[in-house]
Image (cartoon, rainbow, N blue to C red; front, side, top):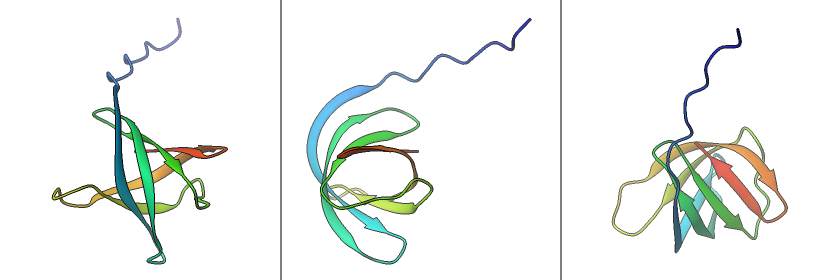
Length: 79
């Protein structure tokens, strides 16, 4: 019998600007498209790489450390 899969965390659609800071310190504006307990989906203008360690800055909230898990065109997802 295959192992049971956890249900995917609920995603909330959003649309706000944040700053993505890459591991080499480059910062670029991104648009956050959805959030969940475990991650986010962003729209990017600059290249990001799968596996890259980043920080996501949004408003007055503290930076969120994350890893980019996928990139498709101008969208990327992180956890």
